[in-house]
Image (cartoon, rainbow, N blue to C red):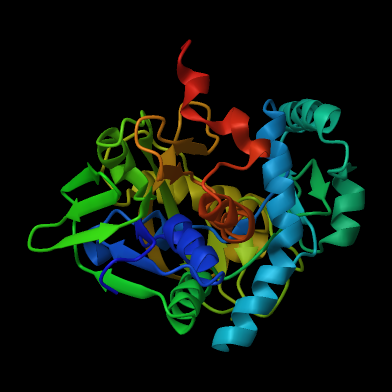
Length: 366
């Protein structure tokens, strides 16, 4: 592929979903991926397809999230038919557990704000008894929770693998182990330099996670994100007991129970700490006391890509037409929107009008 129509920089969930969406429409696309050298957020994703916490005070983000969640069945069907890789996608609804009256009140207030501009998102605040009838085994410290019918989960590593496989089956090319050092606009298109090679293309998408600010800056796009660490644990395989995912606990298809949701401002340190792992474990045992005897088989940390308000940032360069940037921390939830809505818009050389409010311009007054 000597001169592809698009080069996508970044092989994580955001970049590969966009590349897949382009190639699916027979638009020749080359993906440049840093590989295992990158701080890949995809490795630490919890696997939730979640609507009840997205866009509480930002209607455009709430609508974008809901549209992606609604499009997820079509993405799953396409990828599984194309690659044979099971994604273990389910949409049984999702629950956020509250361990105090204060947590319950705060959650209800947030959902009322969300429902005020996203009335299509159905939710129920359930007291302890009603929630216990639905989910057996809850501990005595659980006071209730929020059930959102539109939420679900998926195997995030299977999703990443299927998107890469699907992209290549459609004729896309991946070059791994390369770090983009420079992007030069040309009279017609762009020239991209790595340490040892150069590539030319008609248009370019920067979706390089925490590397996006530097690369997008070369194309006159101001993208400001920071790393936020999340630590995760997974238990040995257990008999199925959890019929739907929770915001901090989910049972995977093979029976392991994944625990997580720490939010730590520690720069680029993606390690684990005994104190945080203990906090995650202690809360999980309060929710499900029988987890106290479960054996932990793995723990890991990963870096989220966070904007100042937590929402995605999508940009089109005003100085260099044909250059785009996309960055977010919701790569699983938004995978369907990135593949099926954002990529076709890039192909038509514009941003979708319904995400105009998710551009970097919203931070200009901050």
